Length: 493
Image 1 (cartoon, helix red, strand yellow):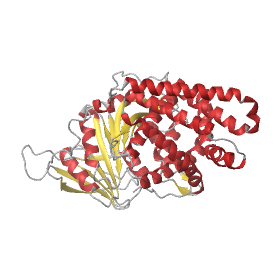
Image 2 (cartoon, helix red, strand yellow):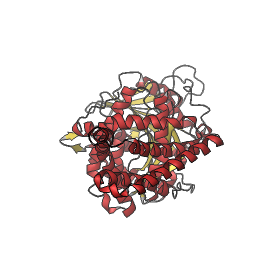
Image 3 (cartoon, one colour):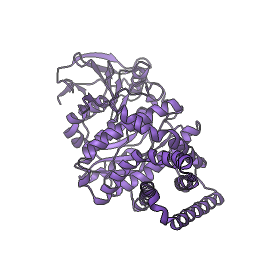
Image 4 (tube, one colour):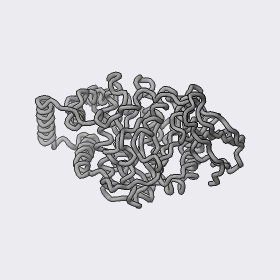
């Protein structure tokens, strides 16, 4: 890409307006790029038209938002666990597991009365147990002192409340400044997101701001960041996610291996103390990362690098950028599930890892309505990418292949099994529901015990809230998502 304009210099002691910068605009793409100390482009990354340029002043230097200074990995460290509580939960889990085994053995002669339900139960049990066993062999990519140039890219829409903190934490994270660039994209926001980005540029003159005058979608924001970046590697961070000290350096270590195209960092919930919904999501996030992604990482087959915090080899992204940016499904352009989609495009030819030592936090929905819409959007992208990845996933490691196809089918079958066990069984065939409920509670207890033992956090019990809501509602939402899979509305903005 051609780069041409010289940038201004910081005035040494000027209490007034900030340093002089440049605003470059593409009229065709309705997009502007604001730079101060970063190199300003001379052509549009999308249409290659020559950009018009004008001089502008950046806002004066202002204090960092609350939550930038003093960030510490210690807030995510393991907390002390009540030994008595841990022993009690472990004993209860062992007792329930033993009871379930005895019941199954004593009733093995009735297996063929409900063969598909019983097969499903066995498959679920083996699958969950295998996740824990495989995850036990997981090891984070070692720190080999890899310090390449890296561009941290943030695409934001209507995130004025958090974008300043997100940017501040990028610069406070500790990566060498001469190897770091940051690019933020305002995707047609209707609030003060752009204004907050400009204030951040006053504090960090090396920041590059891209302003889409109309909403183009997160995928275009991620794409222009990759096209503008001069660095060898890309780190994508959501506009409501916050890096912990050392996160960038650690997440890049796995990419020292040229067969690896991407690495997913570990993300906990920032607003976990808000209510039971946010606490429930913290349990879900932790287990999905430390068990599910850890098990996938053993075979280099992580199926989704979350947008919260993930690193990519730029050459691999650029190689597939055009196909990914213009991906269509059932005749429509794909406008969500960008992170899972990009992961799948890369996973076909490369290895993808997870690093549980590269830490960040993210803000999750605090109200059930927003959470419901988020889950529907996630399920639609999961269904779409299931059809895409299923065509080539069989080429991967045999264990990863069996795990992936099993994990893909179980959520589609689960609602039917639950309906049979909780409705048809007791009301039409006079079958008790205690065994099914007991098995579900046993699995939930297993997740809860793992979360408690690893984190020491007291809200392990919210895993049961997830089980109840999933059984009664969210498992069925998958069918709704399947019926509305062509819907492209974002849903949570």
